[in-house]
Image (cartoon, rainbow, N blue to C red; front, side, top):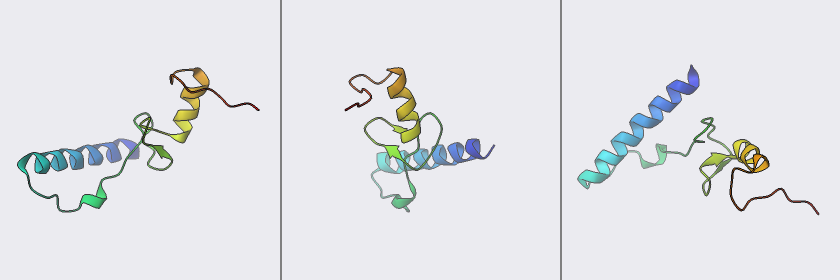
Length: 74
């Protein structure tokens, strides 16, 4: 329930942000926007290059779903 509410709140903020940007005006609180994992919604440990958190990144990497990423072994 809480995750769904956070996603809705984030979506509303992003919609207002894009509307303000398209109109050419400055958004009121630009620091309130933050990245969340696409899969689970986790705000911390976000990997910008992949768009997911560290936990989901590890699962995807182990499953071989991220091209060019392999588990290190030395």
